Image (cartoon, rainbow, N blue to C red):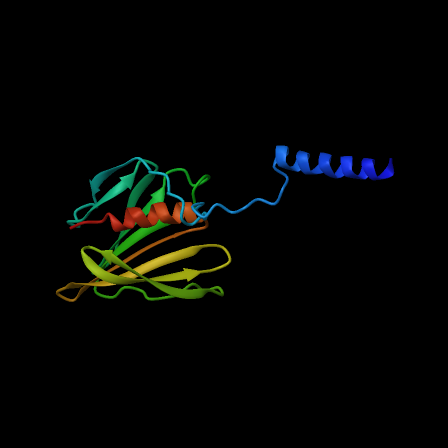
Length: 169
């Protein structure tokens, strides 16, 4: 009697696990990691970046502001609603871009890409609070372009990076 109860209990447990999927899951080989999942499309439209001669696919949730210096222009692509989104992108056009890494502890990596039709190497800074990607490109005639984007989460960073890569002359 005792043995039949043990057998019954084991069979019941095995059936329950099978029926309710409490058995150890087998990882699906085609299952994508969070980094590989498609980033949702963001509604955007191509707009000129002031009188710079450049244009960008600007998401409807973003705005362009600028800062004029003596011999340079900086354009910032920032969220309209900063309560839901804190990341931004930007582009500097001028002779002497700032090349400063984050002021807090960070790791630095590099990634290949294309920007303005040129093969480039993006520098990636990862801190405990955000990740920033930036690239420097020679625009000719003593002018340089510094483009960057940063965000505190990977989805927002990828959307900003897509936006930055949409810049065209």
